[in-house]
Length: 287
Image (cartoon, rainbow, N blue to C red; front, side):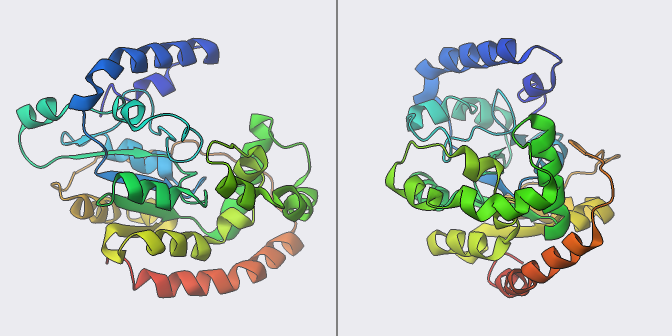
């Protein structure tokens, strides 16, 4: 993948990056029919380490990603485009065959796990695709998500008020996403702090469309504590050789002040049932 996702990390003004990406995609459209669809997706969770996992995998000589960035977001926010547009982001079959050996092609779009329509959309286009979900401690993910949205300018409420406002903000959005395939809900994308940390219903949605052997569940904490064996699970799942990596930097890491213990305790209680169910669902997915 090296070079194919570097654009997103260049220190260029955002409008210029957008223009370069659009031009690059347009140039590849005429050859879209010669290009492959992904064999795997890193589907989330947001703030769970998807960027770190993707950039670790991109060091592998037989794992390939999109030309522009780590995620294409076709199956969530760009579903109004064509499959041909989606294909244009990936390598040609001929270029992969020239390299020889087993290969894997994928992208990392962390909204795929939470968007309610994504599993069905993916199944209709790529029924054999493999999906990797990396799940962070739900309390830590929720807090990190809030700080992330504040830093990006999508959130103006402090944590306690944002959590209190979440249900009202998200009311009706799931139904509208189902009714309007091209609808993009900014509230659903940016303000689902608790909902996005309730992993069980999200995993169950994917299992409604894919057999368990096509879904790999990882824990962020395992990737941080034992990166090499955890990454080995991923490459084994993808069907490529294991990748020895010398260092494992954390990408998109944020620091923040200590959170009110009362909020933490409340969140821990709210997530208890979902976490218990996730443990059960792990037995139904790829070992």
